[in-house]
Amino acid sequence: MEAKVGEILRSTQKDDGYIRSMTADASQVLHELLGTRRWLRWRDWIEASARALFLASSTLSGLQTPGEEYCGLVQAAREGDETRVPSTWRRAAFVAMNCYGTLITEALIKRLEKSVQENEDLRLEARASLLKALRLAREMAGLLQGFNVAAFYVFGAYYSLAKRLSGIRYVSTRPPSSDFQSLPSAVESSRRLLGYVSIVNVALSAFYKVSAARVEAVEIDSVETAPDTSPSSSSSSSSSSSSVHCVLCLNSARNPSCTPCGHVFCWHCIHSSLNACPECPLCRAECQHSRVVPLMNL
Image (tube, rainbow, N blue to C red):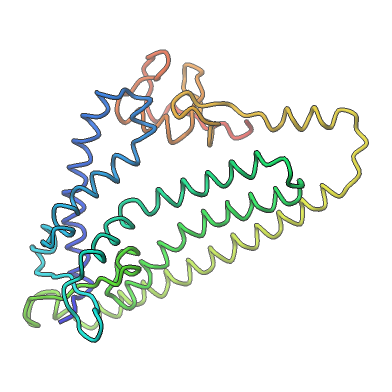
């Protein structure tokens, strides 16, 4: 019998608890070995690797995860005309997409953005359009995750986008009279209503982002086609394009934020550092999350 939404959610929450525990232990050890700067640089990959280790010891080995065993769920997939246990390559594809899909996509988009910015053969209009398209692709990737969750609340089966792409679903081994196999119709209706509302929300968000991108593209074209007679235009544009560098990730500061001692970091970098140690990474002055100020005009 196909698993219900409640069973899949409880199983996922159970597994996420174990993954968070493994991630915290691995992060603590590697933070002490690598130092704050390197740990912040590789933190996302460390978390993904902890999840991959958890799934490699269970799903990839053909075993149930603790959450699946607790809820009585078994993975299944369509193999030809039959539904059976997923093949090894299908499980491997799921583990790779589930753990590293988002990171690889983000790294690929960053690499493309860097190559576009460094390509001097492109016209300014083409470069601006390509960078805008890449930023829009990054935002659409996040909305795709939200759309998948919304579709799960309506239709069930695939809570994870990686499971949907790999074709792995859950089959329940519990009798129909169990807790989640006999949910009241009111609960089912409320869950589907939540899914439909979420789908509308994601669709509106996507429409807004696409519309904003088109408006900005038109504004860029109008500015670039306007004649520029100012002799200091080149110097002002070069100075405006300069940005503050974050000493933690060694990149241009994204959402620059200032500590009480006056040092500037990425918003994500400084808060990640404060989670590990409540002090400035540069001067070691005491600093709390609430004292970090985002610099909106920098």
